[in-house]
Amino acid sequence: MAETPLREQVAIVTGASQGIGRAIALRLASLGARLVLVARNKAALAEAAAAIAAAGGPSAHVIACDLRGPEAMPAVVKAALAMSGRIDILVNNAGVGWFGQPLHQTSEEIWNSTLATNLSAVYYAMRAAAPAMIERRAGHIINIASLAGHNPVPGAAAYAASKWGLHGLSISAAEELRAFGIRVSLVCPGSVDTDLSPELVGGKDRGRMLTPDDIAHAVAMLVTQSPQSFISEVLIRPTLKP
Ligand code: NAP
Image (cartoon, rainbow, N blue to C red; front, side, top):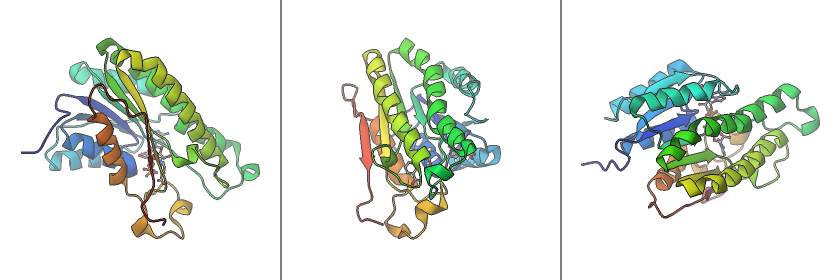
């Protein structure tokens, strides 16, 4: 019989329509969690929900919205709480990135959209979800950052700035929330084979790159650690350089 350590738990995954977020959602569902899948592309979210059902997982709730504004996440949290009055896991994964573009040629539109999606949206999400977790004195908030939040990334300064910012936001909020039994963790992958940006994949040996399932594996590890343990950050590199 499959193990379902997350049975009765509710998990919100942003950016669940494709790539890393979709893999995380499927993995958490396989462990028994009930999922709230969030992104803009409703058809792709419905397909992810169908994939969860086809794998025998619990029925998933789909919410199509743009996370860049402050109004989206309160509605998502409300819908999640309506499922069974609890939010156990929040995975802030939705993200965008433009690569191969020096900062002096980066438009305000790209700068603003990158910061709004990768940083401000995580603040909105944590602000919306934390009170319900504080009330239950439990919860996991997992922010998908990047090795770009640890290193210089020429050609993607806006992306790096958003991920360095996400790092500071996460480790600070982690200290605020751990007294309430809430663990805020960072997962920081190197290059993953997804559609995030063609420049990330171009010229690389895709067979050596990380896969979305590798990141889902790390998230599963975080949400199944023992209650007294707080793994605060996971850095993930491919074994062989692509
Ligand atoms: P992806 O395939 O492009 O997926 C990005 C996801 O974010 C999609 O589901 C997209 O859904 C969602 N999204 C983007 N903007 C949104 C918005 N305004 N509102 C709601 N949802 C939005 O990229 P990925 O590689 O899986 O990236 C997932 C996360 O991993 C990102 O935070 C990224 O920075 C991080 N990461 C990726 C890599 C890599 O090499 N790929 C490495 C390190 C970290 P919709 O388009 O349907 O809205």
